[in-house]
Image (cartoon, rainbow, N blue to C red):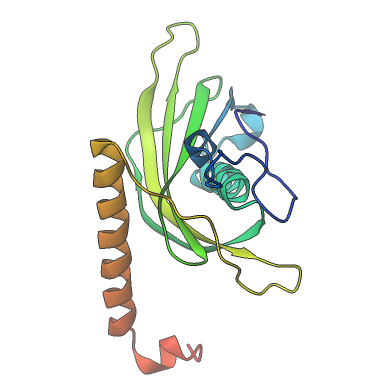
Length: 183
């Protein structure tokens, strides 16, 4: 896999502008690679679990670069598989920070794939993920604030917060024994 940014193990973001804020270009990470036969399911297409692993890896790299910290996955929401990915396709995963809380980062991940000979990639999947930056003891730590500027960034930030609110409401619907981990 190749990336446009690599995860940082440093305790704070490495790339700051003169005002001390994280540079906007560090809010996005892209992985590109060819889908290999080892990722195929019984139907001859890339296995959904393999795709979910790629999504998690790309999103982790983006969250770690943004925060300059080790990050843990809190949730994956609204994942949609639109079309299959065939073995041999060029796969491009793009993770973007779209909103932040005090210690959390909301990321939108889009997946595009297609025959590398044609150069045309179509969206196959997208989802939202939430990561939290943690210290060496696993305790949440503050992350740099992401401020959406463009109309697209503002729409994605609103979408992320709306999905978070919807997921919070769904959690309230869980039966008590499920929420308590007894089922």
